[in-house]
Structure formats: C-alpha cells, structure tokens
Length: 205
Image 1 (tube, rainbow, N blue to C red):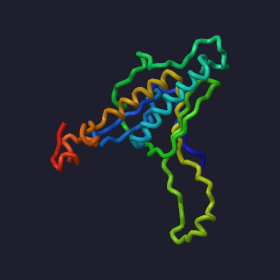
Image 2: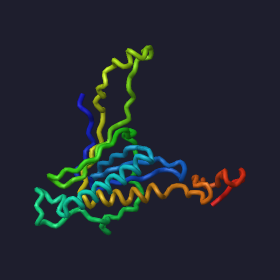
Image 3: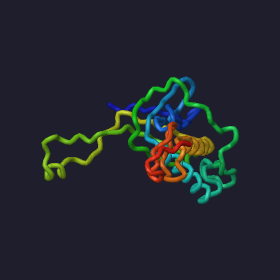
Image 4: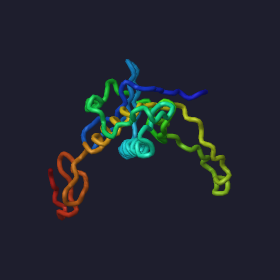
C-alpha cells in the first residue's frame, strides 16, 4: 500500500510550536492550507536542528549565488532569498486548533529545489526495526538492511521567505523554554531547582 502523503506546496502557514508549560512542552511541526491541518510531534532537539539547518541552507544559497532561487537560474532576476525574515511573515501566534498528532517524527530530510525555488522538508515517522527475539549475533549480521517503506510522509515545500520565517520562529520557540541557572547552567523549573553549586539548596528564578 502506498504511503499517505500529507503534502503542502506551499502551505498557508508552516510553523514549529509547543503545547504545555516550560519543562513539560511537547513540540510540533504544523502546516495549514485552507481548512486542512497537519500536526507532527517531534523532539526539541529535532526542532532546533531543523531550524538551524534551514537558516544555514538559505545562507549557503545566498553566498553561492546572489540570484539563487530565481526559477531557471536567471541572474538578471532579483534574489528571492531574504537575509532576514520579512516583517509581514513574522508569526508569533500559537498553533492552530485542533492539534491532532498524525505521528511522531523520526527521520527528517531537507533539500532545495531550484526549479521552483522551494525549500523541501520531508518528515518520516519513527520506525522500529523488527528483529526476531531469538537471534544470535551471526544471524543478526545476516538480516536484510533494507528499511521498510514509511506508512506516512509529511511533505512541505516552502518559498524562501517563508522558510526564513520558519527558521526565525523556531529559534524563538526553542529559546522560550525554562530559564537557565546562572550558577550551574541547568534548567530552572517554575518552582526552582536543586543547584549542585548551592550545596543542595533550592534556587528560584
């Protein structure tokens, strides 16, 4: 059976966001087009790395070719990759409702399609390798290495300005978690935390 593809090319909105209080946040990638809405859960580190990689990809394209992203590679056309997020694309609103998790993200791929100047993000579900319970080391080495086809794919194709806005918002979302202790660098919960540099005393904000 072919995989279910949640495709947005481009979305009306594509953002990273969270649900829950600091220290207990669940991270989501969410795309919307009209009334269609897709939300995929993922780890904080995945969100952080994806945002950083999107920014780096756009910067590399700008450095390699000031006209990068112009369909057909026409250098006479103005560059369409903004160095900063355009003001009209700044998005600080919460995630759209209802938030219904389609799946939890495993592998995430990032690429650039020069034909129509799109940043392409593909998100695949977490998969568990099926290994027989009674398998010795020699048999394990002989198991096929082919990965199973994913049941679902979250595919988003973003114009460069929207991709830059996504990266900017993602950095803000990641940084909006628990404050760091100025003494040990650990996260501070709303009721404080046990700082190892305070001889076991609880420090608050």
